[in-house]
Figure 1 (tube, rainbow, N blue to C red):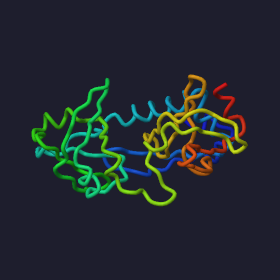
Figure 2: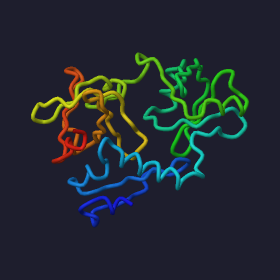
Figure 3: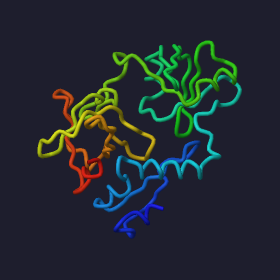
Figure 4: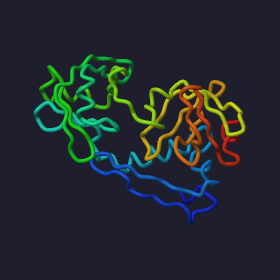
Length: 223
């Protein structure tokens, strides 16, 4: 599908970078073709994602595990011990629904973690937590290390080009693809900017600025 969108189809490659319950495919292209794949206002990227999702309809994402009240936790850089140190969490579901949870057990399994929460023991109760997000007290999170930041620390930062032009404000970071995508708000519209090298040149938390270098013609997709 992607080869029909680009000028350099011989440089399109797809690699499976994660398996398990959630299959993740990494699509690589010639740098000049990035805009073709993302498309105007990000529509092409979303369409590709929907098409892949339809093809993988049998994959059960975020389902409960067994009958012991455990649930899979995906897309986290924290270890089980680090999660347990946070303890009290806020679960956020669709439509703004929230719920306070107390984490009692967490253990690694394959490419993800399995969690158990206080008062959530039946499979039916666990199923209600599927496809939600877990938020914890930032003060209890471990230091990510030099040159590394948590996604929530970057939200709200200004995004600028290498020549100093302001693109907008980072409103969210999407991790649904193999590589992160910055969701940048620009004049009331959303711009999807690749959130990885070689496009991201510098993240200055102290100054609140993210510097990026985009391929020629990329910004015109959002004009």
